[in-house]
View 1 (tube, rainbow, N blue to C red):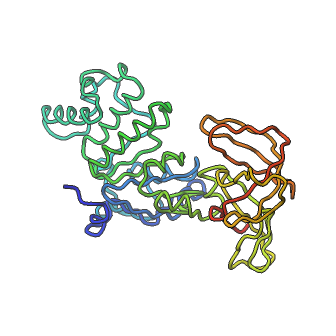
View 2: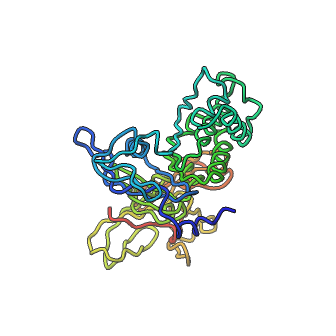
View 3: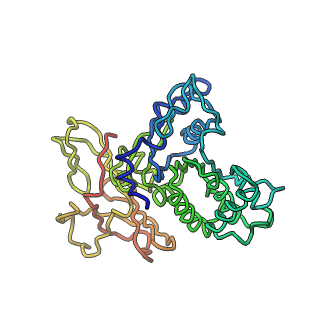
Length: 367
């Protein structure tokens, strides 16, 4: 019976640990002092924009690229530093990429069993087992060109998991799939990897994918991990304005601190620890900008939870399928703000409305 993740963490060294990895190209640190630990059965997403060093980190762990400095451990044993290096084929690490990379001249069974050790019958049995888990047993003797893109991706997953790797590295594995298939295959992949108890490091630039799949997110920018934690904590306790913006659209109000307070059209915001005269950005997401339908003509009255209401003019509104996006211009200073509203809400341009902000969903950062 599988033990809870928390119990395993108390008993064993991390399945994967990287310490202070550095990789430099043409004088630029593409990976800059990156450290990370992943337990068996845990899914960690390395999340960040293109070019931030995610894939390079993955390649160093896989052993196809050498770090300039730093160490990599598997189950507490060193597998690579700048002097010692276990070859990639002996690291018991599985790889999945955006390109499915199936061998076109091999059958599905031969593809899946390619990295499996044992007799021909044992390889066939393992292929049958893995294909059954991804609901493709009927295609065991087919060839890759006879399969759809989604089916090829599931074969690639079965092939990666078949040798029972201790660690699974995944580099944007679902980006080649259309939206209709992606969610189902992601869920299927996650279930299978959890069942196999592998430590998973998934590289992605899609916040939704990271939030959906990860036990932990490591947010990467400019070669560094800038924030790490459970998805909820990374989303609700961002370290800076860029971290907020990576997960969603944002609104921002510029203000200046006086007496640990920042004055805005929505009232005062606390800015503890910042000296007078410091410029700050008050950052919040569009879903936390509220339209006050009961306030028309009453003026900027305070509310218990949302501070002061501010008068704004509708610039345009669009229906996005499951919600509406409304853009406003504040009368106070001409700032542009966005609000998302459930269902259909399409006010005409030029309409005057009152807005409030959820105070407990705002972040104050030095500008």
